[in-house]
Image (tube, rainbow, N blue to C red):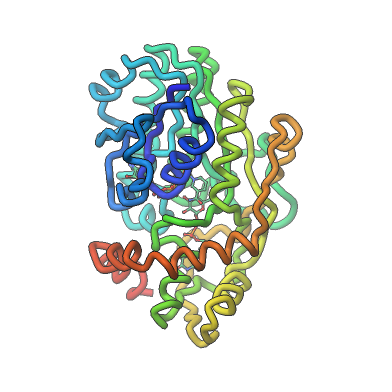
Length: 334
Ligand code: NAD
Ligand code: DAU
């Protein structure tokens, strides 16, 4: 299979590229990535020598580039490329609309013109908004709360419209919160781990009782592989591992595993529009495609903590660059 991966230099994309290169000796990957602040070629150092992997620096919103690239006859496009951080979307929504909506539309147009047989849109549980009790199914209405989730919901609707109108073989996946190696340290788990390692305060928004459902990134990659191979065009698949917990409970677990004091927890002003709880019913992908998570939450979290302990150069370089300015903007005002 010849795949075009977009956003493959980010957290989930780079884990997916590595996973596919290892699992499928006859598959080829082209990775189109703009290398925004979140894209990092260091994430792919160990795969860049593979003859089955190729990197192209570029924007998914660049029509000419996408058109040129798609002349190379790909079997599938997997669109990871996005602005992905909710807090950044609250500071400035524009890049979210440009990449997440307009960029996706450019890819869909390309898929239409070149008759791409599979288009996987990597979406998020955040499109459903918050739920107090019970879990969202694929039929639940979309109620996004942040500019980020609104842009992802808009892209989902565009994908479904391109399926209905032009017959593009789009599949949408909506996954819960990922964690694992190479996650940019603006996100809660790597932020908490790396701050704790450095004995810095861990900012917990509001009362810390917001609930997220955590999934190890390789379980997400396995689910995407299943949708690529067996998913039905025009369908949406929720992907969740059923590890729901409050942010506070999660921080306590992380501090314990690093043998750090609870005094590092610092409650800060809440994120505006902060969704209280995410919860997915993922029975559709489990029954229809036979996927289920295989990594235990505790083992995967311990593995992730160890990865950040052993790869300090990776995150220390990020945290000492432009990221420091962003951190000040978001946290010192709270
Ligand atoms: P990330 O921010 O780590 O990586 C995004 C990647 O996209 C980066 O490499 C960046 O350079 C690239 N990119 C951004 N704009 C681009 C553009 N215009 N053209 C080409 N490349 C561009 O994000 P992530 O956490 O790996 O998330 C990947 C995808 O998965 C996103 O679509 C996100 O919405 C979705 N998702 C993430 C999670 C999660 O918990 N992180 C959960 C569910 C779904
Ligand atoms: O649910 C899937 C989504 O998960 C993805 O679509 C997004 O791309 C991804 O960023 C993530 O969004 P969240 O907003 O849920 O993740 P984040 O890591 O930013 O925050 C997780 C929880 O922790 C959330 O309730 C906010 C809280 N939080 C976050 C940060 C960064 C804090 O309490 N303190 C913090 O400093």
